[in-house]
Length: 375
Image (cartoon, rainbow, N blue to C red):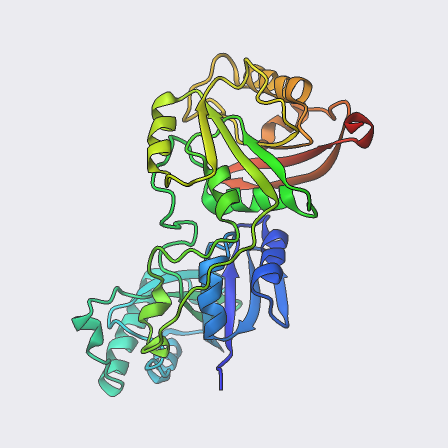
């Protein structure tokens, strides 16, 4: 009989609805609850395996292990001492991520010290299998959240964040995090059935294009933390290739950084359908094809631009909207620039999504060319 576990998917705030749609599309479950910053659901180990390989928007997946009220350190010590660690613990010195809100226990250093003492004492009664030493297992990470004096203990099943795919090896100076890129491409392609050409006119290392290409592709190019956990011991699994793909017939990227474009080209597998070109996208029409454009332009911080930020982005906006006339236009900008870009003639606003990227408030816009403009 398959055991069902309580799971929590950590999602970048602002992307919860897209992450929920992705789960429903790729790894459906009977019940799922969305809250700010995550999704809560129940699933078995087979789901955990598939989700880690298939889901592109979550940051990581946690397994909920225990929840109890705690208001003092002796109670915390006793609860952890008596917890049954054997099914979960694979290394005697775990790492801790601790957060406290409206709790009598607020000193995270002392909480960690108490947790470590209780674990060491518990291991005298529940000795670990020595596999961890022979196989050089890494320390696991446990998340401890105390809110209103209720402690929730969770095991990180993922290890390195899921956006570290192990697929794209070349990075530009200001790369967009992969799970953001996947979410934005997914949103651009929602409810689309006819295949289109996707163009990134300022592609950098090509993250949008790579995420579009691999959105349905199972990726298991790195290890996940759950593979070393006792509850997983002895299991073997095979990720089955998936024939599904986003309705994209061509992936086209441009950038003025010829050195970066050359490095990314060399890193792509020879059969990759991604086409990269060194070109200033603000000078010439990108292509005569009908296209979707998705763009994360430089803001003048980590990547230098000519002139002031507002002028540069206004010129880019004008060129893409008036010259290239994409069927859809996805545009990621700092939120303090929202007022500079008015409703473009011949386009309707499909989505305006506000979130934080690398600590910066940003807005992802999607406009669609109106039917009258298409005719």
